[in-house]
Image (cartoon, rainbow, N blue to C red; front, side, top):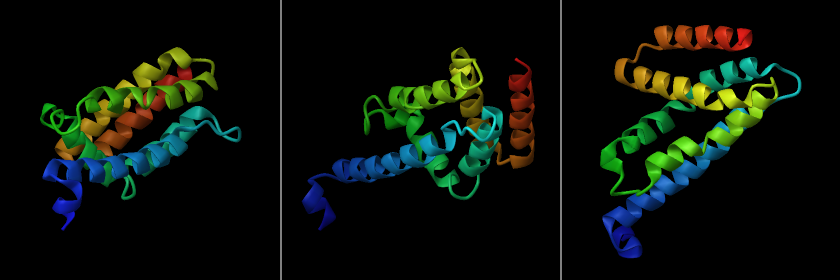
Length: 140
């Protein structure tokens, strides 16, 4: 029945992924927004905990797989969007500490640690690495 409605299996998968991506963007963007009551590195720390914890982990697994080159035929342009979607929220947050130019560095560290966590499952080590990064960021 669903295939009849969506015409093809790929159309059905694109709709499912699109819905999940919209939810992820809403949730993760809110996690990354600057909050006047806390320094932005603290916001990043809370965001990291939520993104890598039970609420965020399914999104990371799903879109991490899609980010691989195998996902491009299903969702052309996804890899670019999955990168650039996060630059504006991170630039806003980093602007709050006077360093908007570091948004790309922050994104690269987060994405790299997400990949590491997905590959190894080593939450202790990746959490410690992110906290070390935040300390360096505070001193930058």
